[in-house]
Structure formats: structure tokens, C-alpha cells
Image (cartoon, rainbow, N blue to C red; front, side, top):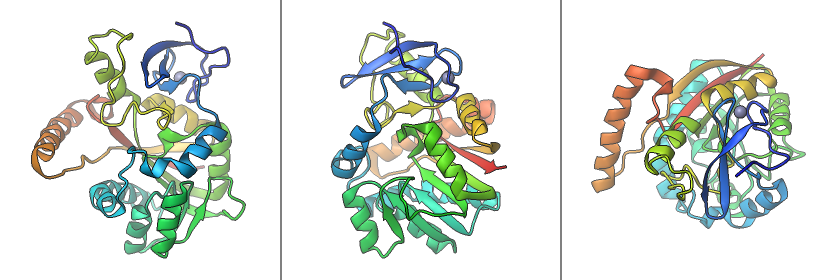
Length: 288
Ligand SMILES: [Zn+2]
């Protein structure tokens, strides 16, 4: 199986890729240059805009209960804001893909001026009902104006299409020296477990892997090198990479999550950011 004629790796812009696996009528391919995994073909921006506006909030990809989401995602929000503050990115902060508004509220609680953008009709309305300063739409919203001191994204960067235009616009919204923090699932986890659990047989349907292979929502799972490459093209210097925190729930799920967390702490100590058990990395970049 070959890749589409117009395939380009979103990360490194390489044209060589191999079929990695299919799921729900979509196919992920692996860049032979940087190791990023990407849907091929990528869904169109128009299709995704309609899906996010009308379907996403109840599509069982993100928690559809705002109260539950706030509680479960709190360690993520705090880790992202820690990464922002450690590099002096606080102040006026844009939460892109604000969801139900949990991270905006956390930013406010921690003394920042939070503004958000959210494409989902239902999530946007919920943010408004919380009194949050949020715009309905995407990065191209005409009322969205910089300069921001920081841009934060919690599990959003892996949802984008049209990365070049998106990052050009994001860079234009940040002040020079501004900080960009993204927590997102990355390619090493998907490649390692997507291969091991199928015994290397790429014709077998990809496992969902804790929402990792989740088309059409997850368009690109960037490799660490691929992430640095695309960010460098838009004038961002890498400052730091952290391990995304593990959510810790109650009951049996919680026991499994604690076991994974312990294993991942040890793995990270051994292999650092290249440990493949890390589902999400937190990337911190600075605009030159
Ligand atoms: Zn690539």
C-alpha cells in the first residue's frame, strides 16, 4: 500500500512514508524520515470544522461531562501551567481549544489573564456560561488579537490540519520571547504499542490505545524530532520536554493507572523523553 500522491509529512515535510495501520476507515502512515504518524489522506479543514462545531463535544473522545473533565484533567492543566511559568510565559495567556473551560479557570486561579478559543458549539456555550473570556471558532477568528505572553494547548495540537498556516498565525499572536506549551500524545507510544500489540502485523486493525489512534480527531502524532522540526520552521526554540502526568482515577482503572505511572517514572529516569511508555509529552518552546 502506498501513500497519497499529495502526502507530505506535517512535521518534516518528507514525502516518504509507509502504511502503519488502519482504523474506522482511516489509515495512519509512518514518516520514514522523522517517525511521525499521520492520517493519510488528512481530513479537510472544512470537514473537521463542521465535525468540531456539531459533533465533537458528545463524540466520546473528550469527557462529555464538564465537572468530571475538570477533575480528571486538573493534573494536566497544572503541569502545562507549571511549564509555562517555569519559562516566564505567564501573563496574558491564550488557551487554544479551551474545551469545557477547565484550563482557563486554572489559569485564572493561578493569577494569569486567560483568553480562549473553542470551535465546539456546546463547549463554547459552556465556557460562556462560566463567565470565561472565550471566542467561538479557530485561530483565524478576526477578534483574536495579540500580543499574548503565552499560548497553551491541552491535547489539541494532535488535532490540527493546515499546520503551516496555523503555526504562522499562532506565532504572530505571541510576543517575541513568548512561550508556547503543548501537551499532546506523541508517536513513540503509538509506534511501540501499535506495533507490539499487533505482533508487528500492520494489516491488523490498530488498537485505540487510550484514544491515541482516534480518527478523524487525531490527525498527526508527532515524533519528538518532528515536533522540533515543525516548530523551528516557525521560529520557535525548544526549551524543555516534560513527561505528561498520568491521570489517577478510582477503582481498578486507578490501580492500572498507578502501575503504569510507576513504570513510566522508572522508564523516564532510564531513557528520558525517549521512553516509549509516555503517552503524552509536554513541549515548551519560545518564540525567537
Ligand atoms: Zn516526517
